[in-house]
Length: 218
Length: 221
Image 1 (cartoon, one colour):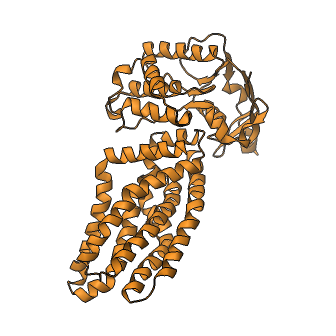
Image 2 (cartoon, chains in turn cyan, brown):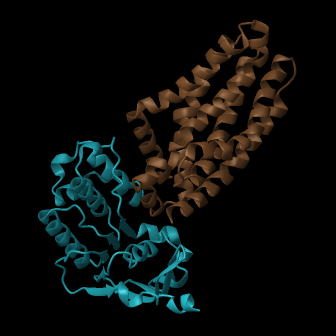
């Protein structure tokens, strides 16, 4: 079984050290919930895990292989949900989802997977609606349907519950549990409580770098 | 290859649905060229003399006009991040987007060019070579422009900056594109100029997607 781990990660944004000395290990079927106040580095850590950001020091590895050695292979095994929903206004819902699904699955036929993913998030009836007519919550559901339409072992979800109603959050929780039952991993940052079975919690405030007050005094 | 085709298809699809954007580039090209007879007067000899240069300069400006949007919309709605996280190399993604850009803007310019050449009283021997030179030259424009478009992501007033960055780089293409047409009209061979235009394209084809992809990675961070 695969595992995903990070060792001694340091993240620097601009002049500010966001976190230092961060370690984590995620086994197949595991879930890691990131908590911490605003600007504590939850999003930065997720972007780092995705390979969108480079760590100032430290290493990320999948099994024993370093991620920086083959970023494309890493891209192929993860789904990232960020702050933007990447929904094209002129494409309809099903075109939006199937484009990403076909990219991830190397051009295979993704029609059925797309339809199944849409109905899992209760937007099956919107399949032919162009993206520009969707509400914020519906766009978020389209974005989540995207990750369900093509399989990938690692899900990195940055506050996925934003703009979602209770019913959609329940659907998301069920989807995550199903993903984990199939050996998938989830890293999720959230401010609202999500009902997940035995998960690890990573509090980013534990890794905040000490404020440089001494320097200022001298 | 599959990934290249899916991205190409999607970008063409997007361009079709937003048809006006590409029409505007061609309209700009036509209007810019049509302004010249008004500016320099309707003297046929003068127009014939400057025809190739005017068409090439207008084509440069028109192709630049649409470049700003090449990565901008994908950058703003988060698609670019996701594209960089697919199993497909970002260089291939960039090349697919450039190809789509050329098909939707470069190709219509090439189609419109002979009509404008008639309007400017260009001598008819120059027509075939004008088209060949544009076919070799405009893909280089899209390729070079993509590097600039990647570098200006996230900056305000990007359009002006883009012009400052890439117009100087367009000059070699302009010089040899115009001189190919002038040579044929003057009764010489244009093989050397076409070979040089081809060489630009061959050099830009591997280098520019690589440079643009590096620029995009920087922008995403």
